Image (cartoon, rainbow, N blue to C red; front, side, top):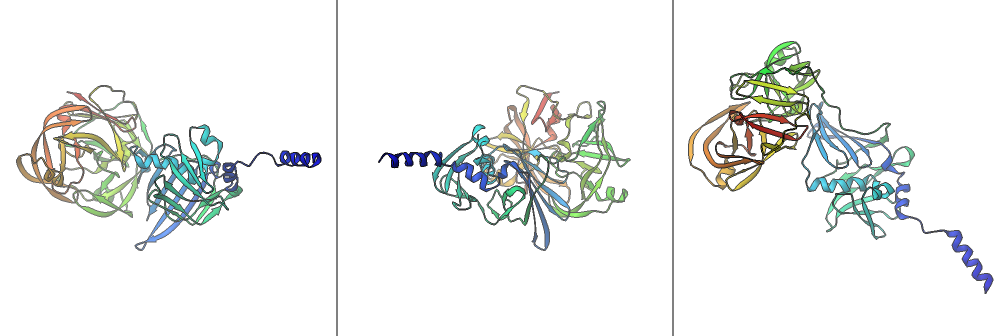
Length: 464
């Protein structure tokens, strides 16, 4: 009996410890989390070609979608999502439930969750059964990764309650065996792609339009109720509207024709009406101390409400700090991220689809309002919200005129308006028939010096 026992012991020692199943998943997928993968796809949608490019490196992901030369997309840095449009200036989206899901989802589908670095960085992975793993990224939501037990490929990702978040099919292998699912379904995924390859280098956000700054050089505000200042574009004198509520930036058709530019591409502009248009590329744009060598501009009709040639929208203003002093009739453009104001007059900025958002309260209701320097009111909101109540007494009726149309308006007094921590008390407000989102407008400059710093994520309102 002793020789048999010895042989069994030797066999046990030779077999070694059981294999790490997470290591097996990482190896079977070519340690994909360490490869910069680029996948591309083309689809015909309503007769038009849509091109999608997805760059993935671990939990980082950059998505470009282009239609007839007009591109936009998202950048996820592993923790937070950023959106960008025509000028590829990435602006951060607010952190919400979708962000918390993405933190874990992208760790799963990139196979980063199977690497030791994921757990060393605060992530957790628990095996529920042969093909089910509970995964939570640091500061993320727990999800269930459903893994094919034979191929070790991710088939789908579920919320713990069992609802599918994303599903994955046909896989392609890039260099070194790194795998990437080309069939990708779910609200947080890109849809089907055609091919994938490994590309060199790190992954980061799009470079976007860059601004350079000379010495502080205030420019004169015009007499209009919205901020219009002198500027030059391609060496020609122009008038620029500084409009945080607009994205993308734009120029009038007459300006494009004067510069000899032919619009191309296809994009939709939403103002008081919606219309399809193209874009042009021009530069340099000189605006006080700020200079943009080249930028893309949507082409729009001339507004009958105010005379301007160029709209400098939130995409370009995301590269600058803007200070508007109505009393001195000056506007200043300074390097971004330089605002250090503190106190109750500082309001936090978040972003939605590239537009700055502030939290407001008026009456019993609160709203995430668009901070819109192109809106001359202090506060404006839609008729549907007004109908829900309270229906404050109507003080006047009229029309607001803007790009491509007009809108019926009511004037009311809101008993108490608060923007972030800034309490304004009773405030005259505009109710617009077709408006869907509340706006906080530039009417505030009658009482405050307005300092907007999108990169710093804050706006400050200093009493005049």
